[in-house]
Length: 129
Image (cartoon, rainbow, N blue to C red; front, side, top):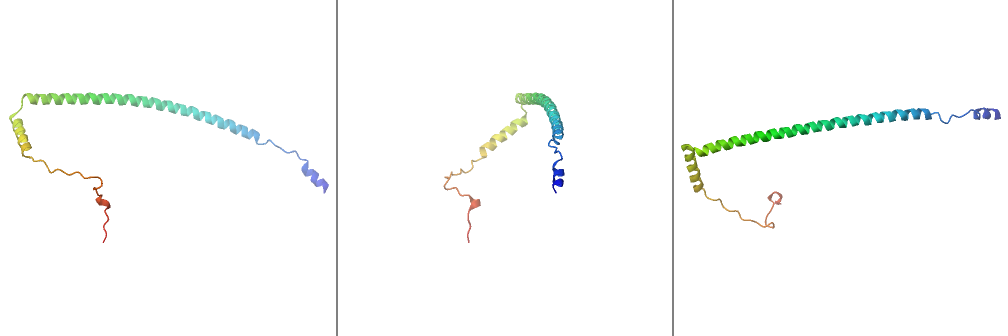
């Protein structure tokens, strides 16, 4: 029996069999991470350029809208100025109607103010039978 036990215990043990594989995997993962960082940098730069282009387009559009609004306002002022200088008889007749309508109106009844303690929320009132 002693012979069988010695034969099993004599074989050399390999302690570092996984170390080269782990080292290779570490290098591959480090390389992939470096590539990811580079690609993210490129993406961020392209987004920065796109945002700047959109901002310049937005400012140009704002200026164009401002100019269009200013032009429209100037045309409206010129049209109203021309109407003020030469009012037609129909405009005078409409002005008289507006003045008469203003004289006929009576003010509505005044509402009395209530204290906060007197105000009741009707939606939450309790109805019991």
